[in-house]
Length: 185
Image (cartoon, rainbow, N blue to C red; front, side, top):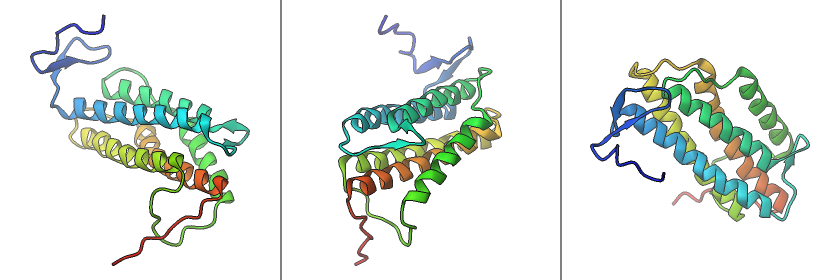
């Protein structure tokens, strides 16, 4: 069934909970923000398959890494909704290891960089900003005391934007596209 009409009154039910909450609540906003980044990652995953350069990291295609991240985001949403699901510390460490591999291949960052270059890089950059917004919403829910989140959850959300920034830079690097510094005017 594609619709139930149960949310017509401006409320929604969450995973594993009989209680309804307002669609304008902090929890609903955080759930929507995490859902939004997950959707953008779906687009990045599809575009990464079409990328002309190699985007394997640690012997794993970038699309597989993105899919693993997407599955972790479902765990973040479940935790936000009150379910007994969590992002593991191993997932956070895995992201950190991927970031180290990417960092080892790229030139050091000496300034801000203008988004763009390849289409895939631009998509990763856009997704990075959506991930940052989702992170802020998740932290806001936690700060408001609406949901008690595990430390791994906030660490995962923080690493996600770094990972997407790394992917954006890597896509340009492997395509031979030079990074551009901003021209402040």
